[in-house]
Length: 485
Image 1 (tube, rainbow, N blue to C red):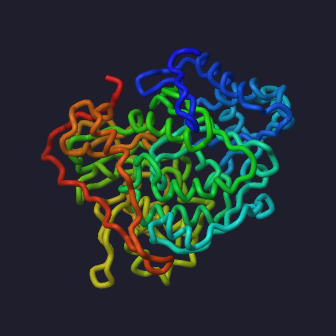
Image 2: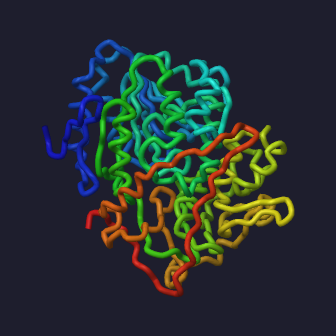
């Protein structure tokens, strides 16, 4: 057994690495081989779920290790790219993402088939059953009461084993991404996507993002996953921010592997500030090619912006809002209370679209007389035309006039490079200077998020979103960037 491997309690996960370690490729490969070697997979078919290009991780390394361990053992090996409702990747982008070259999949991964989750095609789905309305009310704490049909890509049920392979990051809907989320919503029908995302929107992104443990949305996803036939396994990894390396890998059932990885991610992908800032320039990388995915540049920094402050989403390469979600042009971007107060007007839209709208609007209030008031201003400095930006209720700034290095010199501005994966938030009062390594900070990260009710699909109980304090006057503060220090 090589360094850093711990076998957790019964029903747990095997783990290699940790928040203060950087694994070598050899260590990762050996770990994957060792874990898969003890699973009875001979003669069985395996469907491997992997992320698309909006999630960064050394996927060629991981997929290569899985292929090497299984190619001579299993009867069939299929990789299914979990798109959710993202646009499919182009051939060249998919090849680079999965690690095969111009020769095609068969050269790099002989005997393995690669499929996109074709969410736009009703024929790819099979129905697993229905979660009753009463159970949804229990899982959501009474916030929603709606029977939920559960559909999943048929490739999952047509294989004996589902193996989830992917990274874990702080997430705006579920707390931390990964695990069973690659099933629901990764390869699920629209119904689970809509209800889970709207539940997260009711709780608010600012309240749920970066919360460890069984949030209401995580519990809903795990409930749906329990309906999947066959065996479910997961290889959950945590990346070293800004690199292609890994802090850790966890293997086991999806719930345990995800929990182990989320605990490492909480100490690796959360950066803490002592006081709020007035303005953030969020520099969005090109792996996010539309505003639907690039919105992560906003809600990963929203918690540290002072009331009345501004987030500028800087992404000159983004030229459209969401080709796969045209309804956003009709809905626009609004806070949660705007929709809840006018539910009869909006309930016929996909609830996932409404949830996305709230994510890029942030906290706010609405009443019919005074209208909508947002806690912070959201400004786009993208390739999306100004008239389109303003038509969806967002502010506009010409990206050509922005010099990130000049903005970084402003003591009232935080410039976030490679935005979208690390979460920025305020350190709870009383925590020490060590940031994420401080036990009280970790305790805050694991604080429960509970839905409050009763309510139903027309009448929501909506807990008030948290509010940042006022910004400290013109003092350039230090961010706890390195939890390993």
